[in-house]
Length: 211
Image (cartoon, rainbow, N blue to C red):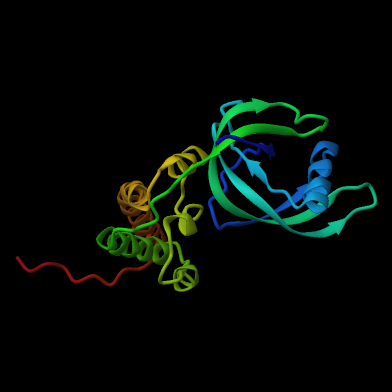
């Protein structure tokens, strides 16, 4: 059954479970934060891509208002919940300054494919090692989901939205693996090229071949 949800379109993709800090400065979204505090309601972030509000979005819960500035601007902390599809978009909710939409909750199959996950983990390890991001790999929990690394594999915003649009963890794994199989060899070759460039101009102690 569709329900009315306040909307905060932004030029980014938010994955379920993600924590997001935002600086709120527009009066309409300051009003939204006030309503979240007073009425204990949630709001949605549908990505704003290609100059339009996309139909899929992520429901958000306000966790805390970190700071309120003298001019009324705010720093807030939020956390992403589940996904929804916008059936009807309204530039203004009834009697409000902010946008809203009639939305339907989306179901998701969270079951991973363990074989795909093993391959993804191997590629992630290669990628992070080549980029000098060893610590990021070590901090990755054993039970990580594709959502947990969706912002850390070089996806464009459009590719992140494609990941968001997938309806199962296995489908997201397949997208992620395909992407990693394309970019990891490029990154590794780039790093090898950088090492060869560093050697250029140095004295080399080379053993000539025996003929």
